[in-house]
Length: 95
Image 1 (tube, rainbow, N blue to C red):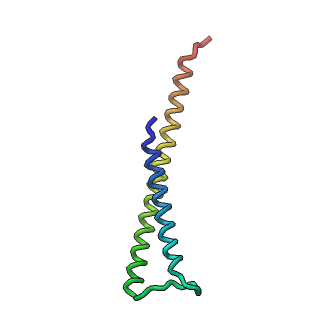
Image 2 (image 1 turned 120 degrees about the horizontal axis):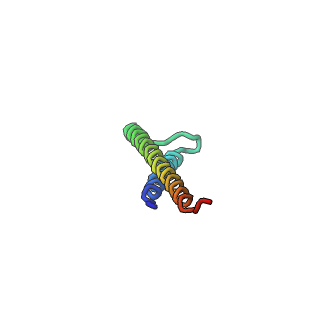
Image 3 (image 1 turned 30 degrees about the vertical axis):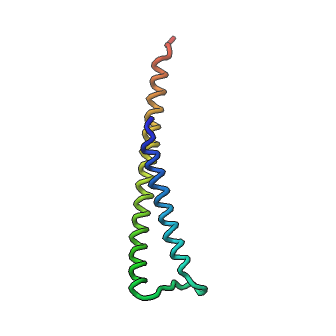
């Protein structure tokens, strides 16, 4: 059995989750005691928010690709199990 789809699926899924966690943690750590995000100037705030949106989009794509790879692995495993069961039944002597 080829485990490439499983490995790729887990890799992309974990990368996507880690990226979302990192972005959300940075956003949380920028907040002050009253719950407002603190930036040194307008340009930094605009650039940071834009890059975080792009990063979250990339994270969602990674998660989706990871889930697709995992689905492919699951479907392939299910197909191989059915073929193996069919081969076992064909080898049994019939009475």
